[in-house]
Length: 311
Image (cartoon, rainbow, N blue to C red; front, side):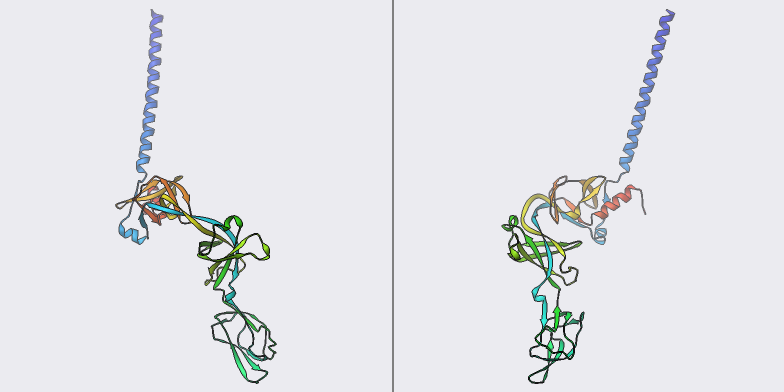
């Protein structure tokens, strides 16, 4: 009997020990869950901004709507001068160059005097004036020389240039004059249209699309390689937002939805994109108010709040 009682007591002690261990694990798990709950509660769920703050930070809000994505085809080419932007100056009547009034690099306006010539026939002097505004890019005569039918000066105005884009046969049927083109040169971008299309020189296996380039700032150098995305059609989508609406937060793609003065980050799934818009597949609904400009400021505020920085 003593041996039996000893065995029972040992079993009871083992059982109590196991129960104690289970209780310890249960309390530890509960504590960890409480800690996680506290972390989740501390994480900010929204940003509050007044209408005055929206205006101050230029934060724009718009309704979620259906949209159309642009289909494009890409072409490459070079920036060349516009033939109408270059003028080679000759004397009207043969004679002697009495005076050249400009030099290479000088800016001239239409009608400015470029040279004084003495006619061989009348021995009278006459002025040669600039036919256009621009810059002197070449000088081929000096005082006292004979004109001899040569080019005396060259004037150029490169504020307008042309992009020659190579269009291959697989693209040709979809491309026509007046289509919109987005031109890119490194960090530069410009919208334009196709003026006309012609066959390439030297029997090359492509056509050339001529696209006008506004080069009034001088940032589009002649001879530079350029990329052109030509707009060839549209594709309707159920929901679309400007690309500036989209932010990345904790590895998730989000937008900020406005409800009163509160702005909630909402995870979204995106689909197709073009140069301006992105398709929203799910996560928000038509008609909801979403930040479409300067949404990165809300993301910054959310991260600042999460870090506990109240400065």
